[in-house]
Length: 176
Figure 1 (cartoon, rainbow, N blue to C red):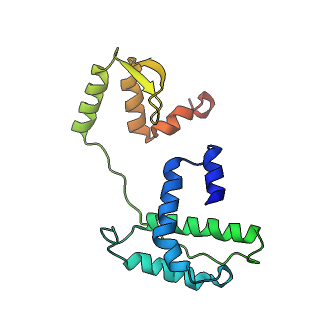
Figure 2 (cartoon, rainbow, N blue to C red):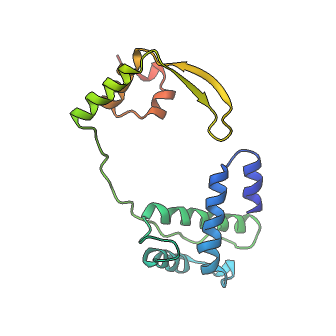
Figure 3 (cartoon, rainbow, N blue to C red):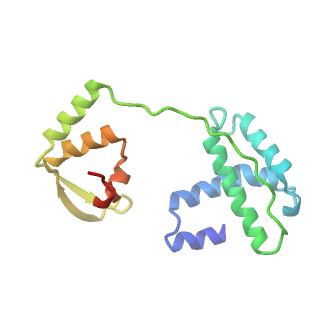
């Protein structure tokens, strides 16, 4: 965790990631793996841990953890094992169990929702939005919502491009 604290100080991790990793380590990983020597942690031990997480309820849990949540545990265990390998505590990394991610279809907007979304976007044209840093509230800039917002939203809806992808889209990536 000291290594992660330094990464947090360098801005490589967020405070939320640090806190989540710390809580996961304290609540689940250490109680299970605490009696094992790191050299004794193998595929079967990690698999037993996953099985325990899968069936475990209570302790603040509403029910079964999703495969995505369990994958976060596996990622953190992998970080710990790689750290042990780098520091000569183990000779090789054990094989890690793989989880099958459940495919979920994406929700979509109904035609009525699309009409309402576009109407709302068009009604906001000319308004000014203040951009601030979420954590500190520090002012960054004012952004005026332009008439292009409707076209932008329609483009995203028809192409399934996410806002983050659109932000980095370059002219050369668009075919005529």
